[in-house]
Amino acid sequence: MPRDSRAVVIGAGIGGLLAAGALSPHFDEVVVIERDKLPDEPASRRYIPQSKHLHTILVRGKYSMEKIYPEWGKVMSSRGAVSGDIGLDVRSVIDGKYLRKQVEVGVQNFFASRELTEWALRQCARKLPNVTILQETSALALVTNDAKDAVVGVTVDEHGTHRTIDADLVIDSSGRGAQGLAWLGAIGYERPAEKRIRVNLTYGTRHYKRAPWHFDGAVMLGCGATPQINRGGVMHAQEDDTWIVTLSGYGKDIPAVDEEGFIAYARSFAAPDMADAISSMETVGEGHQFKVPHVVWRDYKGAKLPANYLPFGDAIAAFNPIYAQGMTVAAEEAVILADCLAHGKDDLQRRFLNGADKFVGKIWNSSAARDLALTADPNDKKRGSVQEAVVRRISLAMATDGKVVGAFQKVANYIAEPPSLMRPGLIARVIWANRPGALKRASRGNARHNGANS
Ligand SMILES: Cc1cc2nc3c(=O)[nH]c(=O)nc-3n(C[C@H](O)[C@H](O)[C@H](O)COP(=O)(O)OP(=O)(O)OC[C@H]3O[C@@H](n4cnc5c(N)ncnc54)[C@H](O)[C@@H]3O)c2cc1C
Picture 1 (spheres, protein in one colour):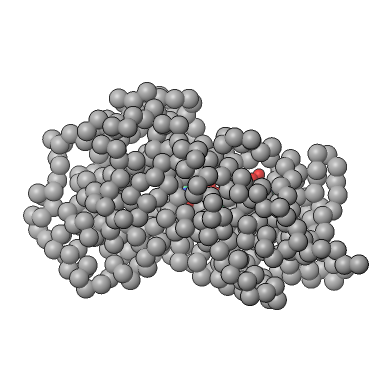
Picture 2 (tube, protein in one colour):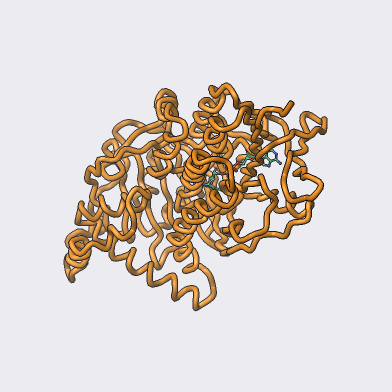
C-alpha cells in the first residue's frame, strides 16, 4: 500500500515555517526538521544569532506572511507587536541634514523583534494538524534513489539516533550557511554558479526602554550613511516597551557594543539624532555584534539538481541585512510555492525556481548596485553610482514633498513597482524639490531639536 505523501522541510526559521504553511494543503504530512531547541516563548536561540539584531519586515513581507498564515497578524498583535504607518510613524534623517516629511501613507506595518515574528509563525504552523516540527533534530544528508536523480528522503540525527525520513519533496531552508551545497556535493551534484559581493559589514545592537512620548509617538528612526560618513543606524519600537537599536559600519567602521562606546559610535554619524535619543534612554541588557562578510545569490535555476529538492530562503540568496529584505523574500517564496502547488506537483522544481529567481533577481538588482558601490572595483563603482545618484535625488525630495515620500515608501516596501517613481508628475516633483536653494530652506542645521522627547 503506498504511504501517504510527505514533504520534509529542513530548518524551522522564518523560511522553513512559511514553506510548511504553503505545503500543508498539498501533502498528507509535512515534517519540519530543526536542529535547535525551540523556546516556548518569543526568545533568542542558539542557531539564530541574527535574531538579536533589528529585523524590519517590509510591508510586502507582512502581506505575504498573512497570505500563508492569515491569523499571523493577530498573534503578533496579541503579543505586543507595534503597528505604525510607514510614512507618518517613521522618522528618517536624509543626508545628515534633513528630516523626511512625516506624512500618512495609509499603509500599516509591524515593528517587532525577530524572535516574536518567528514565534508567531511557529504558533501558526503548529496549529496545522498535518505539520510536525521535530526539534533538536539535525539533517545530515540527502537520500536519493539508485539512479541518484531524485531525492527520496533525508538522514537525520534525532537526539543522537540516526534514521532516514522518507520524503516526496525536500525543502532546504537551512539558512545562510547553505549546507545544501555540501549535501548536494555528497550525492554527486556540482555547486550552482553564484554572484557574491564582499561587503564586510558589522552590526552592533543594544536595547533601550521606550516611553510612548518618544519622538511624538513615532515608532522608527533611521539615520542613513552619507557619501562622507559611511556609518548609519536604525531603531524601531518593539514589544515589551523597548527600542531595538542597530548601528552599522563597513570595513574598519565597527560599532562598539558596550554602553559608552555604542553612544560614541552613534555620535560619529552625520546627524546627532540617534546619539541624542539613546543617550537620554535607559539601556536594557547586553550589546551584541554580528559580521556579514559578503552577500550571495546562488543560481539554482541554472544548476543541475536532483528531482524533489528545492532550496529556499537564505539558502538561495543572503542579502545585505541593511535593506531588510531576507524575511520578505522568504515569505514571497512561500507564496510562489503555494501558487505552484495550486497548479499541481508536476515540474514543481522548475516552476518554483523560475518564480523565485524572478523575485530574488528583482530584490538583488535593487540592492546589489548599492553593495557594488562599496566594492573596490572601479567599474562596479561606476555602475553603482548611477542608481545611487537617482536614489539620492529622490531621497532629498522627501525632505519637502509628502507625495514623493508616499511613492518611495511603497516602492521601498515592494508594494509598488519602481517604474511608479518614473511617472512624469513625480519626476517633476523630484526636480522641483531639488531646485537650487529649495533644500536650504528644509535644512535643520543643528538648531532644530529632534531628540527622543520632541
Ligand atoms: C544580522 C542580520 C540582520 C537581519 N535583518 C533583517 C531585517 O531587518 N529584515 C529582514 O527581512 N531580514 C533580515 N535578515 C535576514 C533574515 O534573518 C533571513 O533572511 C530570514 O530569517 C530567512 O532565513 P531562513 O529561514 O532562510 O534561514 P534562518 O532564519 O537562518 O533559519 C535556518 C534554520 O535552519 C536550521 N538548520 C540549519 N541547519 C540545519 C540542519 N542541518 N538540520 C536542521 N536544522 C537546520 C537553523 O537552526 C535555523 O533554525 C537579517 C539577517 C542578519 C544576518
